[in-house]
Length: 69
Image 1 (cartoon, rainbow, N blue to C red):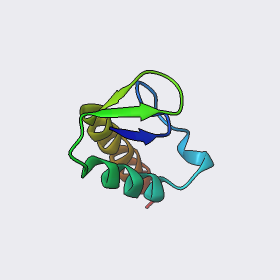
Image 2: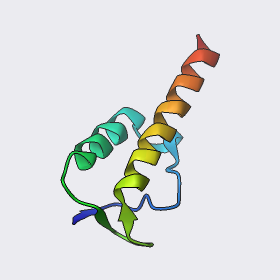
Image 3: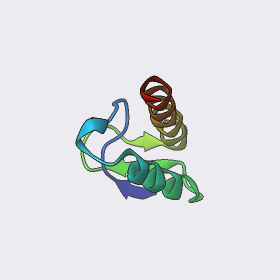
Image 4: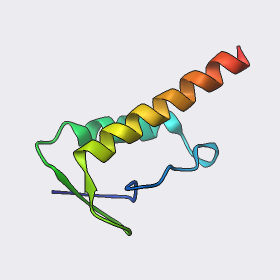
């Protein structure tokens, strides 16, 4: 079990933070051999939720980069 900020069922506001640091933290959490993530608030998260959020943030960054460049 890992205690982490809320990410279950929501998407973080990327314009108000550092998406690369968020990805680093999520990838770090994903490496642990656990299936449950106790969040600061909201429902209990899962490994699948972490993986999905990683993919979503990566997609947002790739899409933004294509549109800017």
